Structure formats: structure tokens, C-alpha cells
Image 1: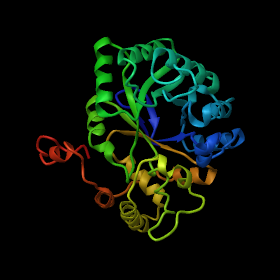
Image 2 (image 1 turned 45 degrees about the vertical axis):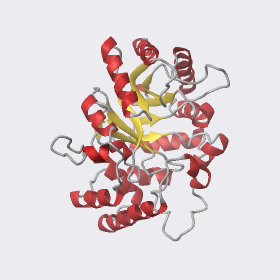
Image 3 (image 1 turned 120 degrees about the vertical axis):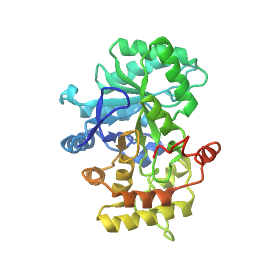
Image 4 (image 1 turned 30 degrees about the vertical axis):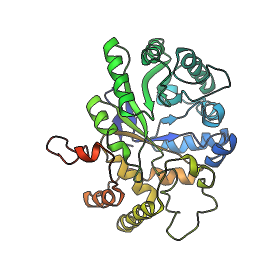
Length: 342
């Protein structure tokens, strides 16, 4: 398993990491993702670790904390220093007025509760699940820095931030000498390339590694969704489709057609090709893969150990290209001053 530095930090992470959104199955939304119990989680971790994947990503809101608890049970008895545990907070987790956001109150409570559910003394990578515009960034960053100094958190990251959210946070951290964000868990896929417009150049400039979530386009790049065919009965899109990133049908089919062509050339599956394409993009440190079962996990693990050719990458790039929003379309017309990061 190839390892890469996580942004400008000294932490090396595997290029594939395992997401625990399928653990627990609490509520209709996460039930559609998966219902892996402790025994199933232990087996999936066995398979992942054997393949060299030792970074496991969770969040407090995944199945109302059950995903973290199941992950905590699944890592029991394993050498803690051989594992990397990542989790997230900031979304609402309780009914109280202060049970949401990135305030000092909520972050300290969230970290302590996550440590208890995970059964560990420290979290290797802690990420804000989203930006909190109601809390001063100084309050958030000073709190996170305190938690790093206390030994509860090792590295810091964010998720779903816009460019100015992230850049302002980094500037404030630099001003006060606080711990910097080294990771951005961002949506990025062959059918969701907005990350390239501003967040990728920012990440290159500031040393922020991309931790890619939903690399298969919210379950659309499995190879099972086809032009002229109904949505498979087993697809979680029946429940979660309206909650994920929007994709026009014809655009999806155009990308799948290109994936089919590359699949015939390589003998690889569509998910493997979509994942491999991401692993060749600038700033990508690790791609979070999920799996409801061992078969899915092993198929996703087959995305490493080989590379698409430059011609195949270009073919996929062309099929997935979209019109950029302003000012990015304007900037891209002046390559001598604004070279594309890809």
C-alpha cells in the first residue's frame, strides 16, 4: 500500500483509508448506507489491515455515535500505535442549544465523547465536519490547539469548507502560532470536480492534503447505473439520492461511457478506475473507501498497485469536464498567469 504525507505534516497515511459510515445503520439515512455490526467491522478491519490500510475514518453523527462505538470495539486488542483513527464533529449532536457547531463548549464535549466511544486516549486526525459561521474562528482554533497540546488530538483538519473559510482559518492559526489544518476532507469524484477550481490550488499553496469523501460520486459510479435502465433496487440512492451532490443524468452517463471504455482497455472495474483516477490528482493524500461487505472492500482495494495511462486519464478528464463558475472560467483563460493545478 502506497503511503503519502498528509499535507505539509510529517504524518504518512495510506492512499486508501476506510470509512465507517456503514457501521451501525441507525436511522433511515445510515441504514441505507449499511448496518455493519461489531463482528462484521472486525472482519472488515482484518481485510483492510492485511492490505495495508490502517487509517479508519468516522464521525460522531454516523449512526448517532454508533459508528464510533463499533469502530472502538473493532480495534480492541490491536496495537493502537499501528492504527490511525480519524473522526469529525460540529454537526448537531443533541437537542441542547450548545450541542452544535465549533464553539469551545461543543468541541471539548465532542472530543471527550468521541474518545470514550472509540476507547482510545487520542485521535490521530480530528476534523471539523463543516464550517461554523456563528463562532469566532479564534475561539475554534485556540480550543483545537489546546486539545492538541493536551495530547487528545494529534493532527487537525476540516471538511466541506469553502476556500475563504479555510484560508482565513490558516491565516489566523499562523498569526497566533496555533496548530494548523493539514487536511481537508472534501467531496471529489469524476462526476464532482468542483474541488479543482479553488480548493486544490489553495491546498497546493498552503500544504493541505485532500482526504476524499464519496469518491464514487455518492454511489453513482459503481457500474450499476446505466442509460435506459431503472435504478437498481439495492441502490442506496433510493433513500439518499436527494441528500447528496446533484448530478445530471446525461452527464453521469457520459462519464460512465468513458469508464466503460477504459474498463475494456484495463480489465479493471468501474469503481477501481474511478478511484485510481483520483489517486493521480494533485493534493490527494488519501481516498476514503467504504464497504458494506468484504467483497466490496476487496474490490475497492484493487484500485491500487497500478496506474491509468496518461491517455486514459485524459479520456476521463474530457468526459467529466464541466463549465466552470466565475471567476474560474475567466482565470483559466490565462494559463501563463494562472496555470491549472492538474
